[in-house]
Amino acid sequence: MEKIAIAGGSGLIGQALIPVLQAAGYDAFTLRRPYSVEALSGVTAIINLAGENLSAGRWTIERKKKIIDSRVNSLATLHALVSQKSSTVKTLISASAVGYYGSVTNDHIYSETDPAGNDFLAEVCREWESAADSFEPLGIRVVKVRIGVVLSEKGGALPKMMMPLKFGVSVPLGSGKQWLPWIDIDDLVRVFLHLLQHAELSGPFNAVAPNPLTNSDFMKLLAKQKHRLFIPIGVPAFLLKVMLGEMAIVTLEGSRVSAEKLIKSGFEFQVTKPQISSALSALNWPVSQ
Ligand SMILES: NC(=O)c1ccc[n+]([C@@H]2O[C@H](COP(=O)([O-])OP(=O)(O)OC[C@H]3O[C@@H](n4cnc5c(N)ncnc54)[C@H](OP(=O)(O)O)[C@@H]3O)[C@@H](O)[C@H]2O)c1
Image (cartoon, rainbow, N blue to C red; front, side, top):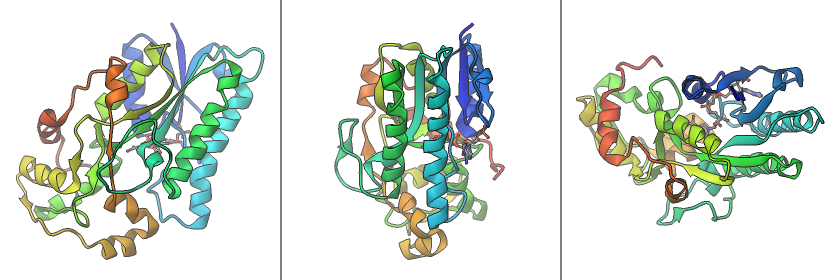
C-alpha cells in the first residue's frame, strides 16, 4: 500500500482528504509536527496543506510574517528531510491559492499562465509555490494546487457567509459584483486524488468549479435554498474594512479563475453550477460555527 503523508492534515481539507485517500487504497496519514525522517519512512508522496490559518486574526505585520513563514518553513523542513539519501518521496502536491493572481475584480479569466498579482496574498502564494518548486531539482514531481474558496459546512468561508441567515436574511458583501471562485470540498479532495494518481501531471493547477458566481448571485442562491430573505443591499465595504482590516480585500474582491487545465487533464467535477443549489440545500443548518 502506497504511503502518503499529509502535512497540515489536521485541518479542514486534510480531514476530508484522508478518508478519501484511504478508501482509494492509500495508507494516508497526518504528518505530525515537528516533521521527522522517521515519520517519512517509506512515504512515496507528500501532500502539503500546512500553514497558519489566514482568517484567524487581523493581518498585522506579525501575523503576516507568521502566515508566510509557517508555509515556507514547513516546506523548507520537508525539503531537508526528503534531501536525505534514504528518502522514498517521489511526489509533492502542495496547496496554494487563487489569491496567487491577486484579489481583483475584472473581466479577465485567470489561468495558470497568468503572472502573480501584487498584494499580500499574491506574495504569500508566490513564496509558497517557489518553496514547493525547490523540490524539483531533487527529481520530485511537484504539483501546486491553486485552491479557490472551499465550500464546506465544517469551516472556511461558508459558515461565515451563512451567519446573516441566523437573522433570517442573506446579503451581499460590498458591491456583490466580485466573483466567488468557489469549489465544493468533496470535489477538491477528488482533485488531490486525481493529481496524485496521474504521475504525468505537474506544475500549477487551479482548483475551482468551472462556473463561478458573483458574490451577490451566491448569496441569493443561499437565501433561496435556506428559505431566507435576500436583501440586495450589500454590507458596506468601509464596515468590512473596519471589522477585518486589510483582510477585507478577500471578501470585497474576486476574479473568475479557469478550471480548463484541470478539466483537460481528465478531471470531472461533480458539483458545478447546476448542482450548487442542491449542494447548498444539503448543508446541515444551522452550521456549527
Ligand atoms: N479552506 C480554503 O478555503 C482554502 C482556500 C485556498 C487555500 N487554502 C490553503 O490550503 C491549506 C489547507 O487549508 P485548510 O482550510 O485545511 O486549512 P486549516 O484548516 O487552517 O489547516 C491548516 C493546517 O496547517 C497546520 N498549521 C497550522 N498552523 C501552522 C503553523 N504555524 N506551521 C505549520 N503548520 C501549521 C495545521 O495542521 P497540523 O496541526 O496537522 O500540522 C492546520 O490544521 C492552507 O494552507 C490554506 O491556506 C485553503
